Length: 345
Ligand code: KG4
Ligand code: ZN
Image (cartoon, rainbow, N blue to C red):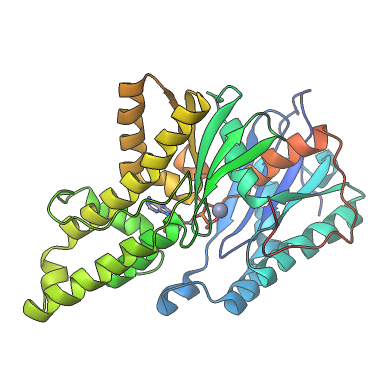
């Protein structure tokens, strides 16, 4: 594929093609050494009717989308493959079949174009999304990384040195949004819908469980159960209870999730003495979480860093950005590098 070079490259860092396919979004992006040139995502509507991601259907859609997506990304960037320095891809964690599509494609491109290959940790890339656009958080900082599969409090000492201080013991925060939303009859993924409806609701009308684990770990399963039993009891008496109170229910659920998340995040800030706090991952797009963290930080004198919502949910810009840091650190991966559904931190 030969495309014209429209725009000269800056002399700074490496030019990285990033590919992301860990779950149900196929994404490609190009970091040109100082900024994102192109950042495209092909979503998968096929899962909506099943109320969750169906792994086999996800792999098939990745296969369908990845070639046209790459062509569109190169065209949007104005760069030709000859301008690239490295191909970076999501190695895990994620759905094995989905990861395999992106990894195989990345390996084929790297081999065909004679470029080095770098496998990226998806959750670390969510954290490094903070270095796509200024203001960048100064090191060390704390990052609450909240997605559909993970919930972690991470101490970030450098782009390569990150330590998990707390994690969820059961559901992830995004899963809590999605499962509670499903109980309300909302389509998958329910998180963004709960966010939108909660903005019109009263967060204090319905109170749900706010489980508190020891230390800095999280648990969300008690919240989900409390929503389930509450709705079951109410709808026995009033069959259209959910429809009649949808916004207030969303506001109550969101308030519980935000309170659970920020309670431990604040404890981590106090224990570590770190005053720069950041959010990352799909749930960091949630307006209730963003506003509550800003309000809390204003009271405590902490500073807050929030990525652009486009870099919160799954995207390949963060994979390209993480790939640039890894490339500069000297990482080069062999072509037999495996993908890992449960890639350790
Ligand atoms: O990071 P992400 O895009 O994919 C994973 O790595 O899992 O996160 C997806 C999760 C889903 O659970 C989705 O419902 C949730 O993020 N999410 C939200 C919002 N936008 C995405 N949850 C609450 N409010 C939002 N605005
Ligand atoms: Zn993610």
